[in-house]
Figure 1 (tube, rainbow, N blue to C red):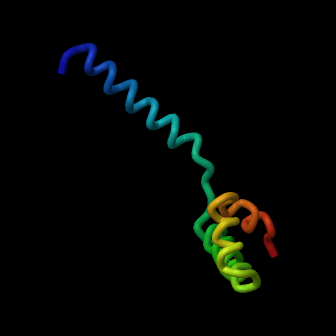
Figure 2: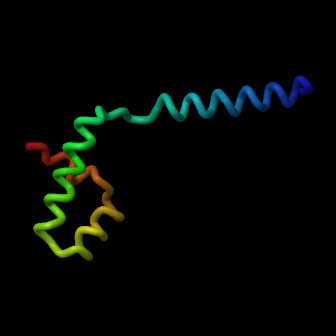
Length: 67
């Protein structure tokens, strides 16, 4: 590997590490509780409306309504 390709490879690694460091972490138990809440919520409304909401909004709306 030449010096310039080594620098380029290291820059790529640093970029990936920065991306991974910026990811918001959630405990598995909390994620499971959020998913359970979402799926319970889905039974209360029509499938199409819920599916559209999940695509547009993600789980954030459902995950914020904790018991």
